[in-house]
Picture 1 (cartoon, rainbow, N blue to C red):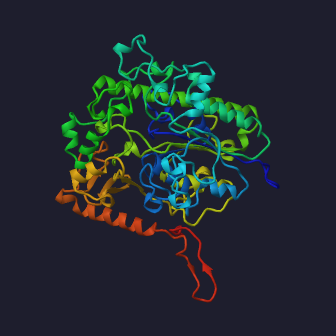
Picture 2: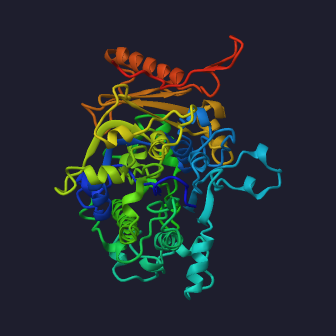
Picture 3: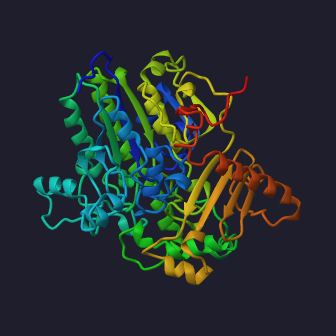
Length: 534
């Protein structure tokens, strides 16, 4: 829809699932090639210290879409309902006349109080964020993509599982790690290509309209099987080795929760070879190949983003489009013997953020030099929603915990900006492993949580009912040594526990608290949670 009285303003909001923050070519990654994202960063701004608020997918996306910390939205696990009372990016941009349209998924668990108990939405954690329209919804069953594959002549028996099976007896596979062999589909027919094609079709009939598209790629999320040529793009002998102790036993001694996670996560979530063992026990060759395949999937995403960007340029829409590239959470890929997104280490929570604003791209003095404008301030996933709304000149809801990053795009850092980041992890696992956790730790579901405060020097992890952790990131950037019980560090533990308490108090729900009727009329105060310095 063309919004009357306004110039063209489009939003392309991209998420690539499970993309960790250090994985970009422009960050001098030793092997990974992401030329299109590197160019996007050159024309925009790269946020180097950007973190998600929680894991896994559903909770992380709840924070991304609502601008709320997990302690406020409380959709803390995949499948935990998101309270319908909260606003979100889709609902807010509708107020400005946009029809936000999804290509992919949002992993939103519906509020059961809004639906009949037999409604199919209450049988899945893969619902759509309220207010979002569907261009193509691609959830775990992958039906639209698989239907497209069958229409192209692929095996009629393909389903959501077999579509990721590797080609049998693939040349060279015996000498490589278990995730080397490609799937039956080509790169041109992958889910990444499919979603990109569908979005390009949608855009082709909206070139004179204001639009908002949310492109939500599954990749590089497991299972780790990459189509040719991306399966062999990176040699496992050349990828960075995982950061970890000399043995799984030694690593697990750091904390009982870490030891449990080593035992909990199965190899089969990542590799389709049907071996029944924890991912933590994967042999070195398979670990290195998994890392190589993970990078290959990233380069595949980058390639198809290049197609999308070229279309915007060729159609004259590039200079009217805000492009945001980020992820829901990161991935350990073997660091600390962990795979997946869980626990408390940075690898699961550090994520990329690139924002390319047309005005910034035009005025960026570094644009022609090949340099990347980088922000070293701590930013969080909750900042993305208010940033998009600010760019659209839309009001940012008072309930938001995040703040707009628009000043950073102009080279300015607000004087009241945060000096640390926070994230949370809830491991109650209702419906799956809660009984096992209760037996191992003697905890109720409400005791199964942790909160993290991290700045440039220290990282403090507070657990509701398990021992805390403290890392000195200047002395121990790999987070190997827990100092929480060190008598000489008790002052630091107390200081950071106090900071965490202050953060919790500052970010309590304020939807109604700054309203008052005592004077005989409704008074309301609006403003930032912290005043800027004079």
